[in-house]
Length: 534
Image 1 (cartoon, rainbow, N blue to C red):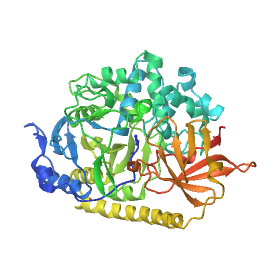
Image 2 (cartoon, rainbow, N blue to C red; image 1 turned 120 degrees about the vertical axis):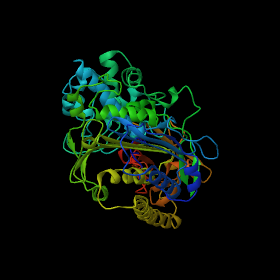
Image 3 (cartoon, helix red, strand yellow; image 1 turned 180 degrees about the vertical axis):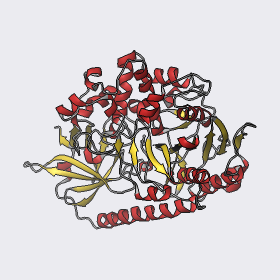
Image 4 (cartoon, rainbow, N blue to C red; image 1 turned 90 degrees about the vertical axis):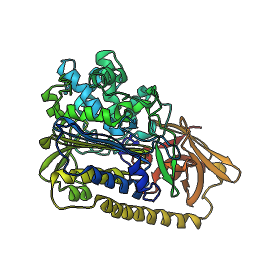
C-alpha cells in the first residue's frame, strides 16, 4: 500500500505552493483537550503553524493530526479540505485510507487468536492454508504464521504487488496462488525486504481458523469494541461518504484528485480507512498493552510484547537515523521498531495512491502521534510528525519543514537527472532492431498473467490484462529495448521494456525495469518474466 501501495510509502514526492497558510489555519477544526489532559510541550499554535507550512510547501490539500498522551487524546485537529476545489473541511472524523498502518491491525487480529489458543505463532502456514506455496518447497514447508508478519520471506521488496496495484480484478486466492512463481532474491529468513503479499496470506489465516472473513473479524473484534466510529476495513465498505478524504497527486506540477485505488485482494496489508478519533483509540490501546480505553482487554500484554519485539533486523536508513538519532532498527509484527534520542520508538507509515499516513509511539512517555494526509507527500507528514516528536523528546530545535524541503529538493533533482538522461537517449533512438509486427503478440507471466503488445499505425502499445491503468505506447530506446509511458500519468512509473528475440526472428519474451528511482517499489516490474503465448 507506498509506504503503497502503494501500501508501502512512495518516494515520488513533490514540493509546490498552492494551499495558503491562512486557509489551512483558519478552517481547521479541533477537539479541545480535557481539563485533566497533560500540557503540550508544543503549543497548539506552533502545531498549527507547522502544519500550515508543511501543507503549503508540499501542496497538501488536507491533513489531520492527533496526539495521545497518558491515555488521553490531548490534541486532535483537522486542517484544509477533503477534496481540492470543494468546500468540505477536514475534521477529526474525516476518513483517510491508512495504507500499511493496516498491518498492525492484522497483527493484532492474529494476536487475539493466539490468546484464545486457536493459533500459535510457530504454526506452519501450509497446515492452515493447504493451497499456500512458495517457489522453494523447503520454504513452503517451514513458513510459519510469524514469518508472514516479519518481511523475511526471501522475496524482494514489493514482490508480486502488481497483482493488486494498480487496481486489478485479481482475487485474494489468485494472489496467494501467484506466490509460488515468485523467485526469491535472498535465502529464507536471512534478509529484510518489505512484503505486502504475506499480509494478504496472514489475513486468510483468520477465515481458516474462525470461519469469519478478515474484514468481519477486524470490524467485530477491534473496531467495534474500541468504538472506532466510522473506521472500516475497505473503502468500498464505507456507507456514509459525507466525510471522506479524496486522494490527490501532483502530476506535471499540478495538484489533482485521483480515483481511489481499490485493493481488496491485499486488504490485510493496507485497505483500512480510519480517522483521528478512531486512530486515537487504537493508539491508546496499543500504549496500554492491549487494554481498550473503556477497560476491556483486546489482547494480552504478552501479545503486545510479541508485536513490539524486533524479529527481523532492518538496515538503518542513514537519513532518518541521523534525524532521529537512531542506533538500531527492526520489524516486529506490523510495527517498525527503533530508538529515538534514547527512547524506544514504535512506528509505521502507510501509503496508497494519493494518501499517506504516519504513526509513532514512544511507550516510555506513553505518547502516540498520528498524522493523516490526502496527498502522497511523505515529506509533509514526516515534517509535522517529526516536529511534534522533537518537542516531547527534547534536544536542539530543528525546523522540520525546512529539513524536508531540502531533502526533497535533492531527491527530486537526482530523479530528474536520471529521467532527463534517459529522455535524451530516447530522443536520438534509432528504429527498433526488428519490424514492429515482430514484437506484437500476447505474452504471459506465470504470476501476473497476460500482457499484449499490439501495433497501432506506426507504433506499439503495451497493455497488461486485468487492470485499466497499465496501458501505454512503446517508444524505441536502444535495439530491442523500448520505453513504456503509461497513459495514466499519475502513476509515475514509466519503465524500460526489453524484448528477447527468438530464433524465428520474432520477440519471444519481455522483461521490464523501472526508469526513475522515484517509482514506488510496488511497481515490481523487475519480477516479471513474460514469454510469448502465441
